Length: 408
Image (cartoon, rainbow, N blue to C red; front, side):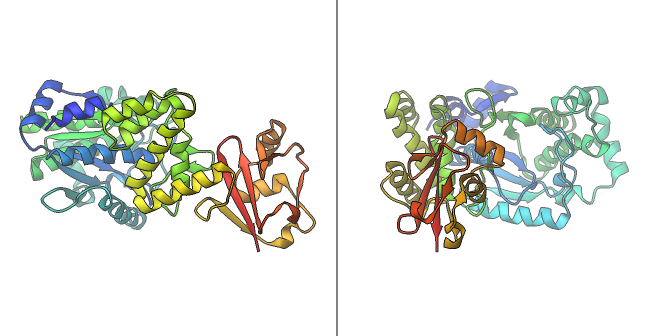
């Protein structure tokens, strides 16, 4: 079987690595215990996290043992990486609730049986630390100058960096040491925005334990312009179907730019590499087939085959312009709302298709709003019951965003 390091390289996951040849050889000859951490800052994981889950899935499939570390302790501090301001402080109760939900999500994608993976919460060792002893034993190995040069801190110096956040790197580094001592963990992996923190742990374990350990980061989910993916005008793309429906999840991926199809297929699906290359080489209207495969395969992994099929059928039905679908985004309203006519901007606001009336005006003026596939040309256009067929109406924003309205 192919060395998983070669597989990760071929699929484009790897961004940075320490001692590449050593690590590659190690992963090819023995089962390696590795860890990745997730702070519980929200009640669901996101599409961006799913890239990390796919790395875990591939490494576990190759015989390596993941440690899924939930940050019950580190979340109480907050990672400053990539943040312009201090993260919102969460209560311990909220953090614990989020972690329980994370566990449920992980069980859908990763084999968490005891011999296959380890699930642990860093609150076990961080919350009861004696601060003076900890600083004497661990803090002395971190220089202020080195920490201030780390990107996660340097970018915040002008706007203000709290002493609370300044502790984060040391806490995350200590996690690696603790996991090495408990489980012989030899490798930490994470997103490329975690490089400074991951290096801190790698150096700490090497100094104190005099053993060979490794650090590796993988790419964040970004588009061809280098911007993070996984967000829309209406918000984050969540893995929780209550926060982002399977149809909305499907449609987000169905609508990616042509230039992003190959990268997303590589990072988010299990489609074989050769097939990814074939699909991403398609052009024109044929590229729509590749996008459909991307959306379907990722939705199947996240939400299951049944939901993926529903999303696919709903998308095809609506895009054909021939029918409505119960699985597509729908707003239910009262007939009375339309008896005297409801202006288009108010309707767009009520359905959540626009974030402000100003946005709605611009879209209408640019010819970007359609009702039942007819272009709306006037911002004062009234929608009445005459526009409904079998109590249903279809709104389109731009080329690909559809929303249904039902009245009763």
